[in-house]
Length: 358
Image (cartoon, rainbow, N blue to C red; front, side, top):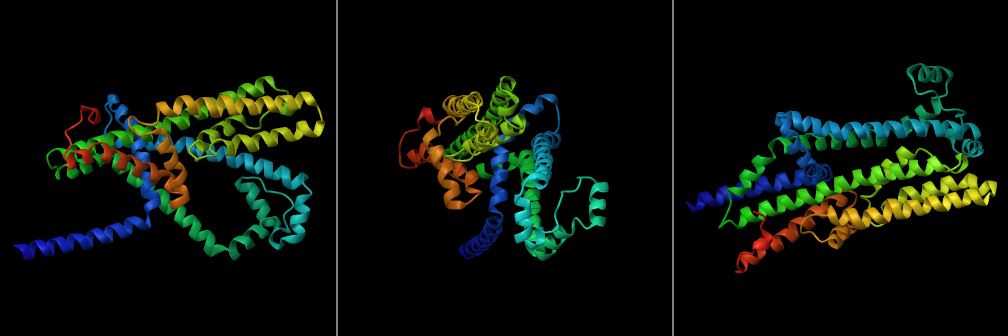
């Protein structure tokens, strides 16, 4: 009997090592999937009042995330092309680039973003520098594109099935319950992860709306030469940037202030410079400081300390790279919840009513 147990345990250990190795190869998309699952699970549950199936609700949730993202990227791409055309037409830096970069030498204008425009540009030879550059770096570009779409596919599939069948994982884990410690811990960590990560999603949405309203309101009273370019796009990017540790929204509104200030400084009009200073004050106070002081404590979770959560968002990307931005808060919640619920009971302490939300 003991020999059979050893064989089964060895086989289970080997399978666990193989699965862990494969999961580690895709740890970034898997981490993002777990992050999205807990961020959207409450939204998925809310849709149940419309008597929709789990699969339909999961599709609606993913569509609700994908459609705004596609619109944002499309809008940003169109603006980038428009500004690039203006840059190529007006900037003397293009001549410098053409003289020093071989692949850039034949570019005199950016073609229209349409089938007809691209075909006409191809016939005229305007696309030759781009095609040559892509051919010379085909291996790198193919690797980057394929890796991106593979990661995106994993994120979509894993998030979808976590929303549909996540309860089965929970039921399987509860089979290993021992004196209700496992159940108490899993329920506590599950609830806290949902609270923290759903709060992050709400924080991004709230800051995006606040930034769009603030930038649009400023443009309504500012003269044309001191207005913020593309306030809706800038506001949405500000909300997304709130996830970045330390610098956060500053990576959007500080460069935006510099871009807005260029015409004002060039004109030498002190009134316009005053408008720029007012915009910077609005961005710092209304968009950055007040939401950070009011919203973040409300949306940071029930038990997780705000300061520790900020450290997780700060140190995670430094230690682990990009996916650490999502992985570190998850690990922090799992560790703190274990210290609050399971560890005291394992050490013999009496059950605390404060750690269980019945």
